[in-house]
Structures are given as C-alpha cells and as structure tokens.
Length: 464
Image (cartoon, rainbow, N blue to C red; front, side, top):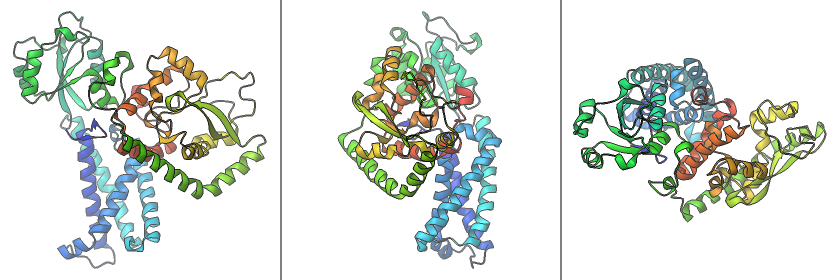
C-alpha cells in the first residue's frame, strides 16, 4: 500500500479523496453549464477552466481534511459527517471568496458557486455513503493473519471487533509455549506449509504478535516474505492502526529498529525557518486581536498574561506565556494541580478563551524566541514531568524535540487531566517523535482547526 507520513494510509482514504476530487471538478463544470457562462463541455472550454476547477476541488478537499473528514470514524456516523461537511463547505466558500478578492485571476463567479456548492455537496454525501458500504462489505480492508495468541494477539482481536477497523483478520497461529487468550475458534490449524495456508486464506500481511520470538518459525517466515506477504511486528501494526505506540510492549529496540528518527539538520533548519516566519506574520496580523483580548481580560481584574515554567527541548526550563483564564489564586498553596475541561477555577471569559484556544496565542512569542515550535509534544510543568517520568519509563524521551503549540497527541486525544491521560498522550508523542516530518507537521496544523471546532476526537468513543 502507498505510504504517507511514514505510515501506511488506509486504502479507503486514497480512494475517497480521489473520487471526491473528480466529483468536485465535475460539479464545477456542471455549474458552468447551468450558470450564465456559455459552456458546452468542449475540450478547449474544459482546458480553459481547468485551473479554476482544480482550485475549487483543492480548497474543498483541504477544508474537509482540516475538519477531520478523512478519518475512518467520520465516515460511519451521518450525525457527525453531515454537519462537518456543511462547515467544510462554508469554510471553502470563505477561502474561495478571499482568493477571488486577493487574486482576481482566480475569481470564481458567484453564480457558478451557487450551483457548484449544492451539486458538490450532494455528490460527496452520496460518494461517502457508497464508500462506507464498500468498507462495511470488507472490500476496502486488507486481510491479515497473526502469529501469536497471547495478550498482544488479544489486543489485535479487540481492534478487529471495533467498528472502525481497517483490516480483516483470518485468524491466529499459536506459539506452543504461549497460553492462548483469543477465542479458540479463531485459531488457525498448525501446518508445515505456512505460506500455503496464508495464500489459501487470502492473507496479505502477517503480524508477529508474540513475546516468544525464539520460537518463531523463521524458515517459514522467510518463505512468506519471498512470496510477497508483508511481515510486520506488533508495535508497527498497532502504530499503523491507531496512530500511537503501545507502551505496554515498548522496548529499547523500538528506538533503533525499523524506520524513523530521521530528522536531519536540514529538517530542523527548515522547521525553524517555518516557525520563525509564520510566528512573525501571525503576531503582526493578530496584533489587534491580542490588544482586544488583553483589554477584555484586564477588565476582569488581575494580570493579563499568565507565566508558567515548562519543560522544553532536552529538559531545558522556559517560561510559557498564556492569556490568563483562571482566577488569580488558582493554586493558593503553590502546589501544581491538574487542570481539566470543567475546572471551576476558570473564569467565565477564560472558559471562552480556552474553548477557542485563544488563550494560547501569546505562545507565538515563545515560538518566535525558539523555545517552542508550532508542532510538537505539549510542554509540561517540571513538577509533573518529575512525577510522570517516575511512573512512565520513556516519558523524558518526549523532550527529544521542541514542545509545540499543537501536536499529534493534541489532535488525537482529549484534554489531559490525569496520569493515565498523560500516559496515553505519551503514546502519541513517541509516535510523532519517531515518524514525524514536515508534511506531517502541515497536516497536524490543518487538523488543529477541527480540534478548535470539535475538541473531542470521535475516536475517543472507542479508544478511551
């Protein structure tokens, strides 16, 4: 399967995005036909409007992506999909209007958009229901088999039973010394011809999900690999399916085996250049907003900015800036307290700031200074870092990169307010540290819009 962001992307996402891009281009041409423009589907006319058709398609696709509409979970619930599609189309219309005013060569007439938007919306809804049916009929899921029947295999079986699973599991091959924890009927018969068994089952991928590596049938595995069957270990499979690593089975070998951790000096310079330029532009562009918010907070009494010591790159301590959203005496005894989404220490205006993430805007100054990046693990307070590093063996490894204003954990998991939440977010952070790159950073920044509008990820319904 194609690889993007150094992880295997589900086939349905490629198929859906390609299908929708085609439908969007077609809807643009049909809107030309129905509007006042003289358009008769001749090749010279199609070629003449191709740039605008492509622009229309790209803006809508990016808007849908930024609102999380290419996640598997968003495909299965019409009550989620329809409202998000509506917001995505409003966002697309806004972006297209701004482009038309700033770059007249790209103007798309209102009469054309008046036809294109409803046509495209109807076609995309129909396409998504079609792809959902294909997904439910297992026509877009890869088929796997698992070597192992213990706790790792059980976790794969639990994922397999989930409604958003992107694979079909033919069954489990038991390792003799390992007690089986999966249902007995899910065990595959032992055979000396592993390749033949997997071919008979139509298996494309074999997952090694056992701690008893010394008992693996290595010769049979070599034959499988030579016959085109992909072989992955449990940790890699779990990461591809969930976007996080499984801390329960993380070993030091994970840090130096397989791909990842390929951030070069050039990558760091490019990322720093991006942070520097974008933070400068945003600070200048948002200066009126920053002044207005400062004035509104000052009316409530007390400090405007809240300064707090946080742990950054390589464990260095820096002062993080935020607009104050809590009461002045939020920690009267000076002892740090976990904050949560319903914290009664938050002021009424502070609740609005938190809900819209506007309280984070002063951190653009931290990014400009080089203490933070736009994308990275969320910086934590030294008090909690000390505690969490004692509870979680690999917690300090999240400081291998600069902390971020947004990040992979922030867009995939709820607001953290406990040690258990910190552990789950660490699984996402370590995934980002290993597999993150500049393209992934761009996708995370786009997805941050979805978190602002809908703070709770859909996947938490299943994966909490």
